[in-house]
Structure formats: structure tokens, C-alpha cells
Image 1 (cartoon, rainbow, N blue to C red):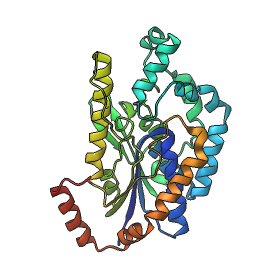
Image 2: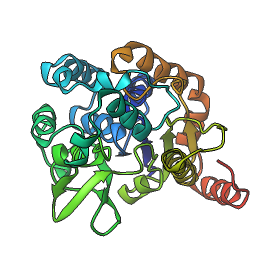
Image 3: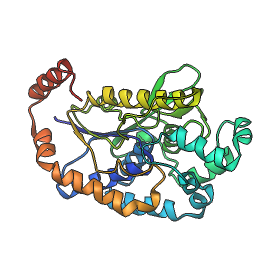
Image 4: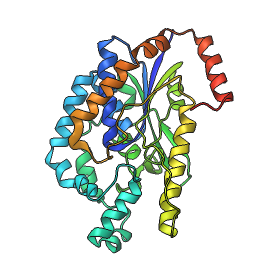
Length: 304
């Protein structure tokens, strides 16, 4: 029996577009059998696997964004003087430089402290992944071994917290003998991992930033920023080759901190899903042998 899976990528607030995608899939009565998420994709995907309704996920996320714990955390402050095409780390250090807080941050593992982060994540249901109606997994990176971990079991809250732990911004998560941070340089799309859950046709949702030409780096900090951007971009491109279809909502002009633009971002997801619905339906109904041949052809030709 055919199994349809979703790979939901990272990208901060841009990932709220995943909600719009899910709403349209439900409207078209397309059943989702498995979801793998990274970063914000793990949050949206995990909540959907738990709640079973895109509308309920949207309501849940709106409540989180309005919650005093989220507001007090101060994510919006990181938006000052930022540009949407800057990396997480570039925005982060720009903010610290402006506030003269570099020394403070160098003495702790992240900008947001563990106590505040834990209080925020208490808003996420503490249930076991094995109990979810939809098969779900999330990726995180173990700082000790350097391995990517695809969590298919365990605590939904802890797994989402680990997958969303943007290095330098949120503290690493100690869980199951691992020391974990964000699953894929913050913006990866774990297309191949959905197949670990039994999916044989994969729709990937990509909300990562485009990579642009820049002026020549002038110092070590510029080089580090640029290297992080390039690594993240090419890692995501490689992952996307495992998808049978990629949908890219028009949110790349937005910042990862733009949670106050939730209406615009969800609408962008709905628009992208609607425009791509003929291709999505074709994927769902496609012969498995045809998909395998198509995938091999795509890999051989180095298609994105």
C-alpha cells in the first residue's frame, strides 16, 4: 500500500508556511502517512502528528506566539538591523555587537538561557512519539559524536526541543546520552529520513534562504559567516534530491524571526500548495516503479 510522506524543513518563522501546506492537503483529502521534520519543521510536523488537524496546529501556534513566555524570550529583538538573507549566526552576532553583549554570551553556551528555554517548551505536549496517530520523526545533531540522529521514538517535547536548538541561540539539549543541537545547520530538509518511516513517495517543503553572491570577505568573521551559509545551502540541496517533489512557498524574503507575520506566511504556504496541487496529486497516485526510475534519473543528472 502506498505511503505518502512529508519532509518539513527548517527556517524559523518561514516554516509556518508548513501549516498552510497541511491545510490544503487536508482540504484535498490527501492523507499524510509519515512526517519528518527539522527545526521549525519538527515543531509543525510533531504538532500535526499529535493533533491530527492543520487548523488545530494553527490555533496552537498562534497561542504560543501570543504566550507571555514566548514574548518574554525576546526573539523579536534579534530582528533589529537584520537582513532576511543573513544567516542565523550573522544576525545573532550582529545583535550582540550592537548591544555590547559579546563577552556575556561567550561565557554561556547560548544567548537564551536553559531555564527560559525550558519554560517555553513546556507549551509543547509531553507525549511519546510512538503514541502519535501519524508516524513522525525529527532530526537533531549530536555534538559529541557528530552524528545526525533521527528520533523515531521518545518524548515529543524533548525531540522537538533538540531539533530546534539553533547553535548559539538556544542551549544544546541533553537527551538519551546525546548532547543535541538543531538537526541540519538550522535549515535542512530531511527528505531521505521520511523513508525510514515507511514512506515510498515524499513531498519536501523547502523554506530555506537562497544563497546570493556577495562582496569578497574581508576578515575571519566574514569568512566564517559565508562558509556557514554555503555549507547550509549545499547540505539542503543534497537532501532535497531524496524527495519526489519539492514545494517552495514564497517566503524567502522574510526573516526567521518574523513570527508576527504568521498570517502572511501561512497564506504563502496555502498558495504554494494550491499552485502545486496537480503535481502533488500526480505524486500521490504515481506508480512506485515510475517514481524510482524518475528519482534515479534526477540523481544522475544532478537535479535540485
